[in-house]
Image (cartoon, rainbow, N blue to C red; front, side, top):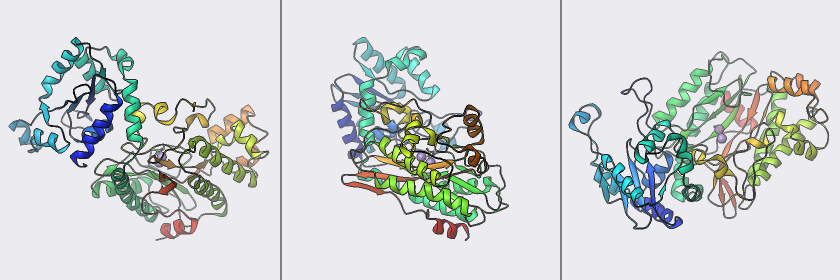
Length: 462
Ligand code: GLY
Ligand code: MN
Ligand code: MN
C-alpha cells in the first residue's frame, strides 16, 4: 500500500475530472471455489485498489464530487468471525491509512445511494466485471442486471483510464518489484526445462516462486512445448530433446502490480539451426520495436514495424514472398503472427481491460481494424510518457490455421505453403519484455532476463 497522500491525491484528481454526482467504487467479495468457506484467493478490484487502497473483501467507497465528501463502507469482524479468521486492524484505522476519515457500516450503503437517487443525483459507476458485483448493484440501485451496462458512466471510465494509464514513480517501483519476482520465475524455468521433465513440474515451481516471494501470479502460467497455442494453460506434456518451450508468466507484487514476460527455451540446452533462424527474427523484431517506443508514436505503427520485420525474416527463409509492405498491408504475415504486439500493464496484466479494451487502447483518431491479426491489437493509440506496455512479437506455426488458409488459397501470392509444411510441427517462439515510456524515449523494466541466444542456452544448460 502507498501513503495516504497518494490515495488522497488520486481521488482529488478524479473528483476534479467529473462534473457532479457520486462516484461508487464497489470492492470485490470473496468468491467461492466449490462451497462458501472454500474461496479462491482474494483479489481486490483494481480500480478500488488504485483509489482506495484497501485489500480486503466486502468494502465499498463513495466519493461525493460536489461536496468533496468521501465515505468508506465496511465492518469490523465479529468475535465469532475472529475465531476463524483472526483479528484485523479496526476498520476506521484502515480507512485512515488511505486518507478517508468517514466510515459507515456496509448496511448503510443502500440508504446513502437511495437518498442520492431520490435527489436525482448522478451515480457514476464503472462496468462491473464479476457476476457478484452485477447482483450487488442490482440490489443497491434497483437496476435490472441487463440494464447495468447502460448506467455505466462514460465520464468516470475515461477519467479512471486517463489516471491509471500514467504510472507514477512509486507504481513503476512496484512493477519492478513484480519483475524481480518474475526474474526468479524465468531463470528457474530455464534451469528446470529439460528432456523427460513434465511441463507441470516447471509450471508448479514457477507459481511456487511467486507465492514464496510474497506475491502471486499476475495471470495463469503459460508453459508449453505447444507454444503455437497462444494462451496454452495445459501443462501435461513431457518435454523432449529438441522441443521449444514457450514460457509466459509474471509475478504480481505484494501491492498487486503485474509483471508479464515471455521467453522461449530450447529443451536440451541448444537451439537447432532452424530454431535459431526463427528465434533471431523474433528477437530482432523485439529489439527494433522497443527501440521505436517513444511518446507520440502510435503503438499500431510499432506493431506494423514488427509485422514487417517478421514478414521480411520469413521472406529470407522462403516461407513468405513478394513485397513486404504489401504482404503486411494484406495481412498475410498474420498466419505466423496472429496477435497484437502488446498491451498496457499495471494493476492488471492487461491493464484496465475490464473497463473496456477499446477505451484503453483506442481513441477518436485510432479505430480498431477488422483484419485478422491486426484486429487483435489491444493497444493502438499514441504512447504517452508514463505508459507501461508489453512488447511481445512472436512467430507460430498453427497447423489448423495453415490448413484452413491453404485450402482457401489465402494470400498465396505472399505465402509459400509448400515450404511452410516443413514447419508444421515447429511450435512457436515468443519473446516479451515490459517497457515504460519516458519523456525522451523508453526504458526496459526490471532486471534483464536472459534472451540472447547464447544467454538462454547458457541458462538452459545449467
Ligand atoms: N500473458 C499474456 C499476454 O502476454 O498477453
Ligand atoms: Mn505474457
Ligand atoms: Mn503480455
